[in-house]
Length: 376
Image (cartoon, rainbow, N blue to C red; front, side, top):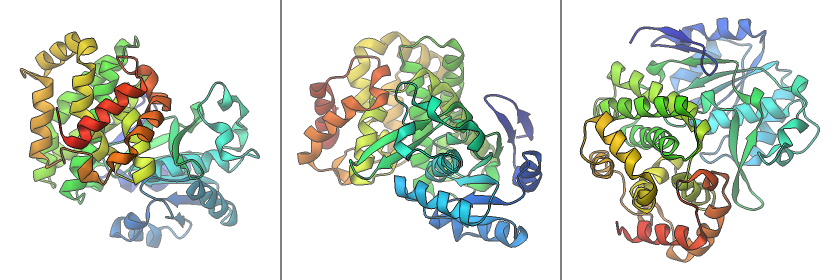
């Protein structure tokens, strides 16, 4: 795939080898001493260690959990201020990107973190002048957080995933270099790829009116169909990796239209059991599709025609089989006893509001129980 520049939904420089432009991107944003926010695993890999050797002006913060918590953000703010930094490079998967964006938000605020939860007009409390500029560098192809205006962070006190939002949390510049994903292990490739699918699929199913998002979601799913299995089985295939990085970005752009029960169920599971978000979405996906079937029949028919398949549900099940995705929540360590509590939390999750069917606690409990037992 050729290197290209996109200006939607932000300034995106896409293509293999674009990471070499990182310093130039920082300079364009007036960043001279960035804090590089990533996760502990990535921080030990040559990708990061070489960047730090070549750029002694970079600081490093890598205390980021797979399901990041408020303390990760607070500690990142301390590191930013202590190092006298003037911008953030958020580099990694969704967790690192979310923490990086949240750190950039919080470095100039006096209020506590949860005062900026995406509820009502809380975003208006933000001191915009205090926010730091962000360059986002995704190294997986799943969340699309590099083009998101929010961060999903777990509140440790309640074990609840909360969404922080402000329009300027959208990174000013994105370096989307598929080469950074070439070493991604197959299992992680599968999990994040299914996350990208879930974003595009739930956006497509959302009952909200947003024709632009619909078009993006359809093409995002076609790219997943074309390249996820190839990226999983042949990790060095640059075209497949490029397609999946594009599909991930497209999913996050599309879900401005809304998400649904896949995420409503997945968020509390991740908060309580620390499961991988994309993998959890992949496990619950067919159970949610079956539950929502009365409301999404025509959309599933249109999607099937676009993908050239006979059944979206059967495609999803076959895709999960090829990617060796677990079939049940029990295989992720979720306990049967936790399901009533998870159902309550799912209904309260912000993504529940745009599910194609109104979600009730009994609905969510039924889906969770079926997903736990593996009963389609």
